Length: 415
Image (tube, rainbow, N blue to C red; front, side, top):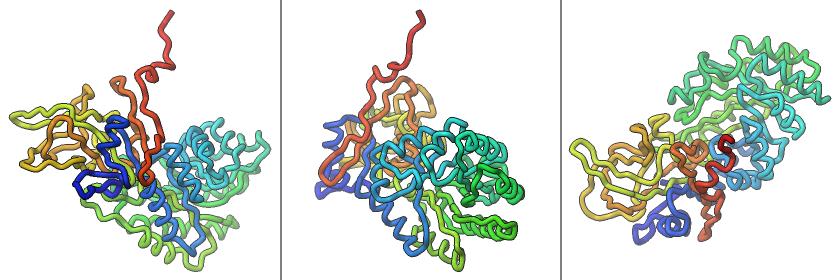
């Protein structure tokens, strides 16, 4: 777990703070992020592209906490958003609107209006129908909407099917064969300004081959658009670089940047990059406490106070997260199913983990900085966990724990 490490006494810590002390003070379950890990991940990614004109646009959907967004904004980050809510978040966090790109297949007219008024860098248009609506909305506002068209290159990223977004059967983007004609149409619209071209082939990608294949296709399209008199200012390569959950060997930012330099050599376009998971995934963990140990004839269960409403990735993607006791116990281990209190058989955090546990022990679920709290819910009327950022020996409450009263504060009984 890169976001946590054992101390000299084998007690796990995040930066200078013990997880046991965090649990005592803030309760469990809770999400704990390392400020140093967040900032280092962004700096390392950005530095890999040094000397190459580029803009890093953090993919907000991975972790949209205001404190996380503010840290990246201070570093000069741009942001990739997919909703009006995310636009409001990044602006509240101090983002420069001119560094914001707006992706997503279902932008509403009100979201378009808000983004135009904010002065965002670019809309990543994903259909001919969206382009027509955006032209109309921009006309009403007396503006020209800056756009890229998200092109679907039909490249297999060789990842989980739910996070593969660049195949021809995907809902995302414009079919590659139709993209040139749509650019020609966009060039004739009075309230559209063509700025770039965009691809995003998926998430948790662990090899460069799919990126190279997709980039080569889109760069060839850029050259054909130039023949049509359509100038492309930036090429958006999307995001999707994977992290280490178990035994993956992630592509390094330096190798990714080296590939980009090779492909962009002699070209005039700048690059946009949209890392999400890569910047936050390994900087966070979910801290939970064992409520009960439940041995059985077929399986042994460790029932913890975190559940699928807190971390749905194992259920939704069959995802594997590292699991470690905060204070390792000596002695023999047992093979446990780590499960939560939710009234669903699918409610599990991890399967078949060999651990020495007792009731009351704390467990750290690693690599939980991305698509974890962001996807949490109130299923079974469970308040969502708090989010904490450790900064050296200090702990900042980035999001307070919800209360039971919060769950129905917006509801009203019938009269």
